[in-house]
Image (tube, helix red, strand yellow):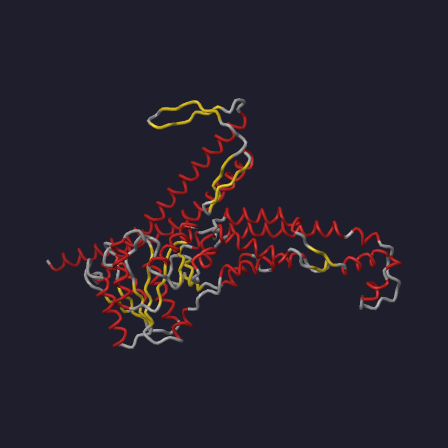
Length: 146
Length: 349
């Protein structure tokens, strides 16, 4: 069997490196989406608890593991960042609804990014296989020469 | 692409339509109450010959069809406010949202409309013209190259990690398919592996690349690329540069030097659509500091909101040239505002 050309091996290594870099970007996007999703979940829980609470008292974290009890002055007026650097005032219920919609959007985005990442990983596996067989062919050719 | 925006615009379109419908219903009763005998004119205006005497329903229908409906600000206030929220939620920049709302308001309010004409057509027409106003005319690169002296030198700039190098390869591939000869200058001598990366792309798509060692002066690389293009009668020079933030003054000075040395015909700003409003803000900063003639947005297939694509041309006053839509070299589409609007407002629009 003819050993794989060194140039082809190098090109495959470049492809692998490039795909690896792209995969890293997608992984960091997935992380960002997951963080956003967790934050939205936490906000929904907090808003729902605030709505059910009678005295609107919450624990306000002030750093260093310390918290104070704080009374929310207007528990039904939520300031919500909706995008394009715009903050609007919404009722508690509307804010929860908006955050739930955002959750659905983020989950759909996560699905799309995951699919792309899987596709990229399968391409990387293919390249890895070809590289492996290229290395084996080179090693066999070297043994024959010895 | 832009699925979320499309869905929300559909909802806004229905909302606007039903607001006008509600207004029509409110204005219609007086006509319906008119006795059939007192309305000979509208009935006569009906051209279709009718051998039998028109029924009461027919006459009422004719009266409503021939009446004119005046859309008032009050009718649309709520629907326009919802449209505003929808656009902002999709990361459409505030000033662009304002422009769209103002355009829709001007088109719809105070105009006399035949009740019989399709309300949906009316709403879609208003939304379409508002979107087309903010999207601008796009940028036909092929036409530009055909009508300018060769080599046409295109310099690509932008922040790190947005897919600039891959975009250059895609545009190179696109131009090659259009029958142009292309040379790429590996001007990103700063990022480790960037020269190798663009070298691999160039080899795969069969385009000549001019490169120096890592750490070399990018102005020198790009000057050599232009010289090569001139001596070999190449049509287009695509110049890669290192990603940079507009706040890094040393890198911005380097970009100024590149511009002085290679004298680009076009400076193209590349950013990712998924960055939303951040991409718009950054593009505006780049345009202010180094200037840009056109914009390319990458990863548009991942962007459900579409805010950057809608906002960028209107905000920075420069056209959108291409949208990157995937991993393959073919996955780049020339930005066509009419096509985007058709896509957003549905094929039946």
